[in-house]
Image 1 (tube, rainbow, N blue to C red):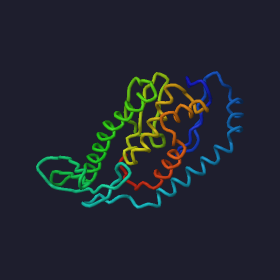
Image 2 (tube, rainbow, N blue to C red):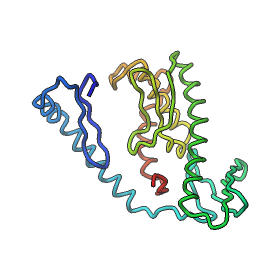
Image 3 (cartoon, rainbow, N blue to C red):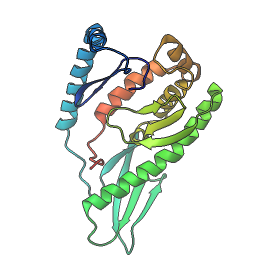
Image 4 (cartoon, one colour):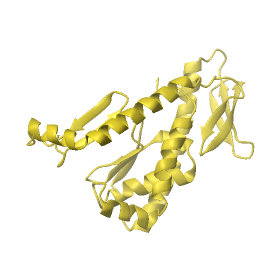
Length: 226
């Protein structure tokens, strides 16, 4: 690829290695051997997380279902009406979905996903602007992603993408990912300088990083990516 160094990414499909075009296969082999303990531990962790997810029963899409939103549960209320409408009441923590008669579960899930994404776009942009000002940086653009394993990304031209599923988590965990990606506008790596940059605007980053991993494993199976 056009990247400047060898990179490793673990997801449910296994290990993916990306490298600059000038790098030889022998150099890539050496890099893998050097990182073998990290790779094996991450593969094991990924397998365990996948197994834990598969053991959880998926959410039943019925009136009264509990859905994760900003670190707590909200209640889904299903109503029948002449046209599809969505509303959220923060006081009662109820998400009301008015659907036309005969609406399918697929449509319901699409409506819930759309609501989550609308909420995510507004909130994430607010938090990006807040933390960008604190760090004294700017970003080129912002968009949502649906990545399976990455919570955020930042390109060399400062285009930031945040996973909409972060809206399931509490605000401090969202802020950690926001601070993490904004720090990449100054440091496109995970060096000590990078983490020092994160720490300038989010000192509790180490606790948040571990808690985010834990909370991700605890999420109910929503099956909103179909």
